[in-house]
Length: 137
Image 1 (cartoon, helix red, strand yellow):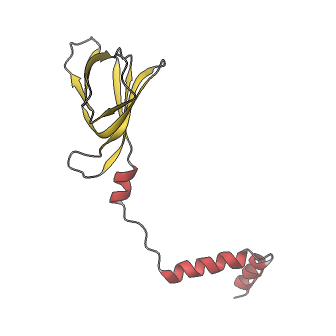
Image 2 (tube, rainbow, N blue to C red; image 1 turned 180 degrees about the vertical axis):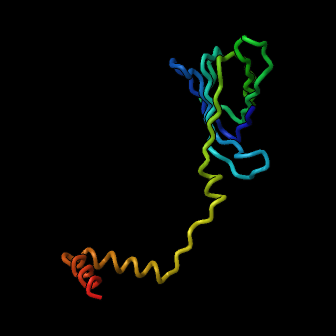
Image 3 (tube, helix red, strand yellow; image 1 turned 180 degrees about the horizontal axis):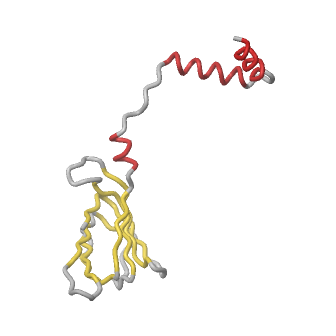
């Protein structure tokens, strides 16, 4: 299902989502970019996990139709099988997005002109003076 890179934080709770894993994983199978990833389990009957695990892999095991889904958490420290009603995987897309979209290039002259205009507009009355000059021309 998913393989985390490095440390993974484990949290258990009492609400609808009663087990969550947070760490970094690869953005895509062949991508060198990693992203923040959360795996949220609802209705999980997993035993208590340590606060941190390393090199975690979550495997979705086969389960019978109508039965709760079965999962296995594998790490360097432990291997745990448990049942859960559902699992959700949330991946951060910021790293992949900003890797795909190049940063804007603004020429030095445009930056200087905008800075000068902002400096002029900070002077009281300069905005109305500039607008009145514009309507005359």
